[in-house]
Image (cartoon, rainbow, N blue to C red):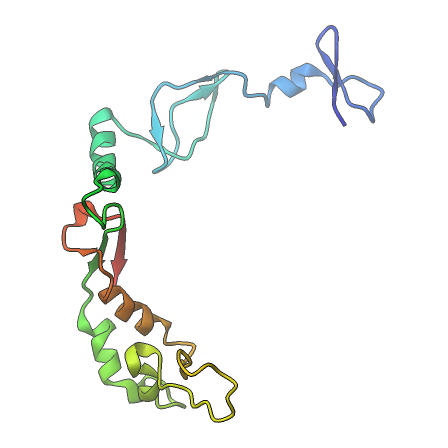
Length: 179
């Protein structure tokens, strides 16, 4: 269903016999956006106006210096992609070191993680748990483990420690993680 434009400024919808009043439509039309300031996807409301009515935008006003500073790390990471001699260009990950009580200490006390299950067997093998026995030949001979559904954080933490593109320079990073 395409609305029909009527000479004299009206719009007639196919299911309607009366033209729609353009004055009503014009209140909601975004015909001209005049920005008093530039915005970024960061914060609240800009001072931009749409036909004299304040416009709500997702963004906050940043002067040029702030925009450059904000995008510097991102731009540095993008330029790393272009560096063909660096195999990790654009793939660097910076891992924040958390206090041991959030990771290692919990694994040391694996018996007390769950009231009903001894989690020590499930946290072994870098969180994958012990290999499943394949007595009936249902599984392939490798790659099947008795993994607990709540061990994904242990698995992820151990895998990230083995990632080949970890960096201690947070300005090169493409992603920040807390592990």
